[in-house]
Image 1 (cartoon, rainbow, N blue to C red):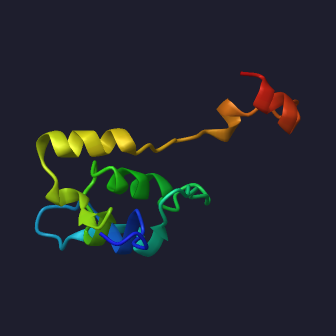
Image 2 (cartoon, helix red, strand yellow):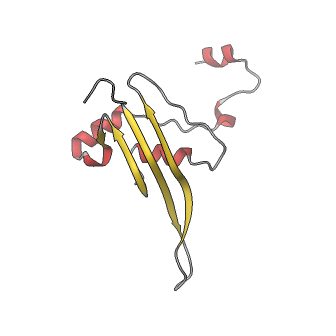
Length: 120
């Protein structure tokens, strides 16, 4: 793989969840993620921010291959995550991390940035 290729490439990823419907009714889908694309170069970090319900956690779960995209491609180091099996897949998951954060539970509004960072 070329040194210029991104470490992570997300291309036109969509995730739709099928909603429960009554018997003999047509299927209804909830759009959780719709046509998301981005790249993360080697040595860089990405933070996804947005309002509640905007699909951040769904994207994180798809990046870890814990949730399958409805469509689109997710490549890690030039290869689809889903093409990896067994030990290779477990090893790759150890290289990735998703931090799910509840800002109200993790940040103290009475502390300034310095106090928050040095608390630990």
